[in-house]
Length: 406
Image 1 (tube, rainbow, N blue to C red):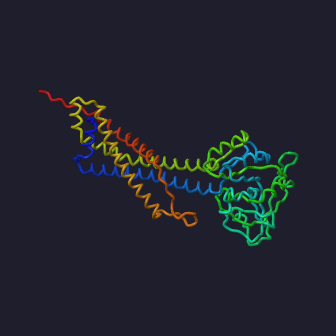
Image 2: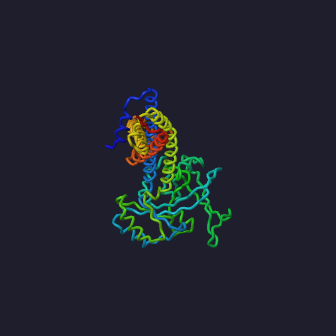
Image 3: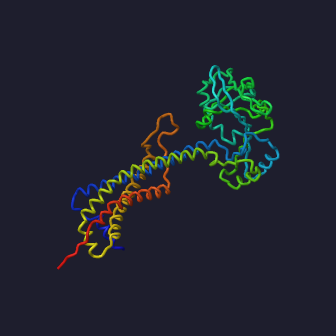
């Protein structure tokens, strides 16, 4: 073991000349441990929310979604569909079409998206599980039934108990190949609300879903689609996704579950690391106590430093003693912080110590710990501890050596 490590270890556990140094040292370690635990828990809570919301969203997403790379509509090519259906890993294929629209219900109106789906859509997207309310309408007899998002129902004030009330839908039509948005070009489509679904805010506040053929006929796009949605036999079979890409070619984007939630995941990660940065700044402020602790230890060991210099130890080697002492104090704080965060993790998982408001779908904050987060936090705290240790060590340059003259 190097002499610098031996001396820093002795300074760490040796009795100090003043109780104030002991207290300040303890406060420094406690502050670092609380800061470390806070960083771990911030990352863990965001991990929990990301896992919860991703699973909740993707539950009603298809395993694979195919959309046009440029443009909105593409040809419903039966030969392409047949080639997709011939793939071993594909279980079911659904066709959809959607368009922006104006919704009017009684005296209330709002903009949203009207979507047409075929009979396979409920299975491909597990959509029946998202239904939270339904009327007594027999949609086998009434073709213009529609599923409405919870947000759309609330905004328009739709009453499912009154089946005679219809939602009037206006959609811009084409005029000589160009989209004409004048009111005279708007034709009406009438939909009777039969069910209410609840998936997530983006869809709940935007979408009304109806029959594919009815909407295609209304849009005069009998042989057009907006997307092809696929359910796989094995949702994690990436080889099937690669085969689908080969069949569709470069004009299409093939999205697996991760890519369908890509924008949401990016936002979650951005928020996660922004909060991490804010808590790291707080930890930097806490580490000022570590600077004070090491500064006082340097002053207390002034004679020892002078003797070490007189014995031939370089200033840089003496500095290493106090830098390693600071890193050791930081390491103790890190270990205690890990213990605090892991203890809180198990208590939160078992007892739900921190709850959420009643209108949320969960009772307490979700939490998920990842090994990589511990490594990142340890590296961050040690880096801050190194900087905090380096500043007091510069005082060593001004301490002279001791030479005894006969």
